[in-house]
Length: 54
Image 1 (tube, one colour):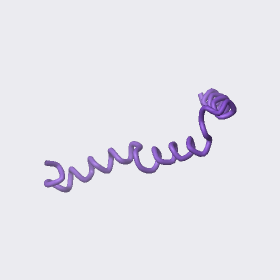
Image 2 (tube, one colour):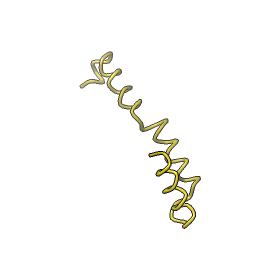
Image 3 (spheres, one colour):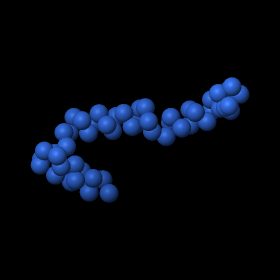
Image 4 (cartoon, one colour):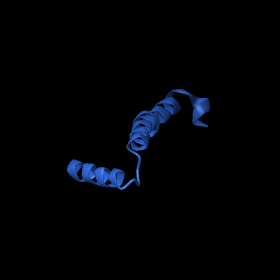
């Protein structure tokens, strides 16, 4: 799967459809701000903070 993703990324950047820096920023944003950790953080806070839960 990784090879296919890399090939697709290369093709899209070579054709100018995607800027590699923008793609890197998007991936970083997902991994650090939006990803699964965000959901886990919300659930954990709801467990310990009754006002947040409501």
